[in-house]
Image 1 (tube, rainbow, N blue to C red):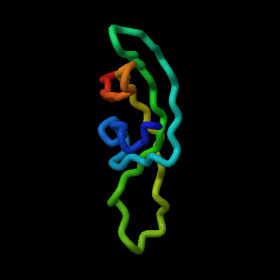
Image 2 (tube, one colour):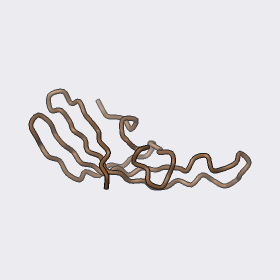
Image 3 (cartoon, rainbow, N blue to C red):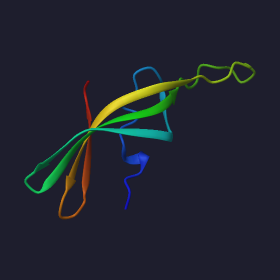
Length: 90
């Protein structure tokens, strides 16, 4: 089973947008450590966001897509594969 983008804190990790897009998500592994009973994975997430609600209905200006990046920690239980995702401050 895969962890879907809806389970990631993309909205909370925004730095220059107001709405996270999860249609293109790239992951960069930063580190993996093994601790008692679980794996701890630190990963960088590259995704896009938009500034929603700033255009009038008849405004021909296209919606600008901003590149976003955040770092998360995934704690994966080795017995059950249950995963907890935490947004890390950078």
